[in-house]
Image (cartoon, rainbow, N blue to C red; front, side, top):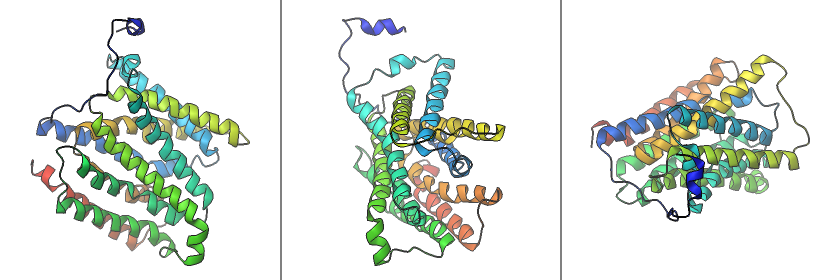
Length: 323
């Protein structure tokens, strides 16, 4: 379909899309597997971001999401899908898409900027988003939160707390630290809530094609570029080939294809299982950092992996049994 087709005045005004009927179990499992690809890609984000730390954060957002737009558009073209047609969506869809992608990254960046010495606490609050997904999913039509989902989510949360706080010998939420860091903690909590709400609301827009995420990425990139030009003093580019490869991998993987896989999984997969499986991101990313010599391991890493794997198994048991 050509772009000119949309100028036809006979076309009806777009209405808010409705979620499709419940798909077969096999399709749900397949979509859940695709969504899990995003979790694997996000496990590389910490390593790739640490290797790109010299680049200003908002510039990195602009470049990464610009690459994500190009990646999504290319994949759509290869599949014979119309990217232009996918962008013709109602305003609520755009608000949710752009608000989720840009809002999450903006709040998380702000949290680390406000409290650079409280990275442990900020990270822990950020990793509440999988728990938000599992709990918020109970509000969706036809969904019901079971005791196993809650228990699995709490088990995963315990593992996340252990792996994040274990590096620094525990959390430090004393009165003095808490008072000075409240704005940062609020921003981190806002990031977790935004991503949880974005992920669950994606289910309500089940008929919106995943190709529309390309448009969300483009707007996010433009917002990042605007912020970079307004608030960041210098533009920094990699000086070596490895730096360019890392930047490319970041834009193609955790800040690129991952969002398209996640969108498909949220709309057509087991949303609660994906929410709990997301707890695999902290241990997997930590293990990668250890492997590349950017962090040290210990008993907390393996204990957290056990808690997170057990929580994922517990919350996903119905899906595994085919119920």
